[in-house]
Length: 85
Image 1 (cartoon, helix red, strand yellow):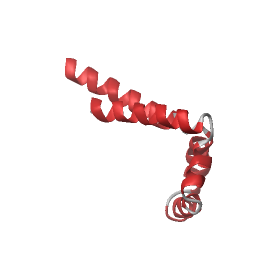
Image 2 (cartoon, rainbow, N blue to C red):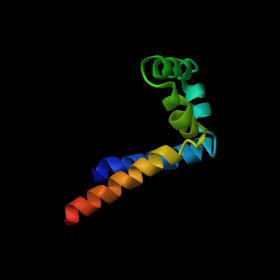
Image 3 (cartoon, rainbow, N blue to C red):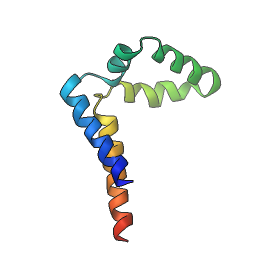
């Protein structure tokens, strides 16, 4: 668990070094322009449209390094607490 967390933190540092403060949506669009349209269509058709508007759009507007940093920090902390307890 800690190893995956550290890998995600390293990914966050790499994303910050390469893309700076660019939003996650812009970075994903550079990598695969059709991906966001596909994900939006699937979420709005087969899940709740609210999920796209209220959950995924704010995540896509955040800087690209924030998501792996939060996940990596949480996983590293959880792995550290679990190993100690």
